[in-house]
Image (cartoon, rainbow, N blue to C red; front, side):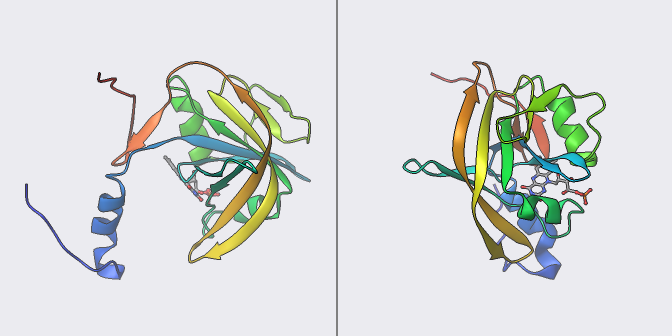
Length: 166
Ligand SMILES: Cc1cc2nc3c(=O)[nH]c(=O)nc-3n(C[C@H](O)[C@H](O)[C@H](O)COP(=O)(O)O)c2cc1C
């Protein structure tokens, strides 16, 4: 196995992305309600931060057209995608405002709750920190909805499933 060593910068952006892609993640869809209607975005930057109080984070990119809506949102819902929700994840990676083929209803705070997510974390904005070309949005989890099932995973630019090993 060959090893490349480099300092991250404009010339090594591709190699840097590839190295980051070695870290597999789940896939989430974050939703919020806006004066123009519901919006959503597919993300893999979701992380649990604190158990008590229950805090989670995700990172919206400043280049995204949806950035302002999400950093301004007081309430939002983070949905962990199941292995059968690849299409939904791809849909909300492409477009944020098209809910025409999506089953949802407002959660207690009015954020769109998508049907059939593996887990849903209903959040109130706790903090938002500037972080380079992204922001770090921290949410306090107000309520959780959880289902059993397998999760959709993302690694090296590809979606996949979990291979169980004993
Ligand atoms: C697997 C996956 C993970 C992503 N993770 C993030 C993320 O953590 N933060 C983010 O801002 N965009 C993320 N994106 C990109 C957004 O889904 C979306 O494509 C991007 O914000 C373009 O938005 P725009 O059309 O509003 O400009 C991810 C996309 C994919 C496919």
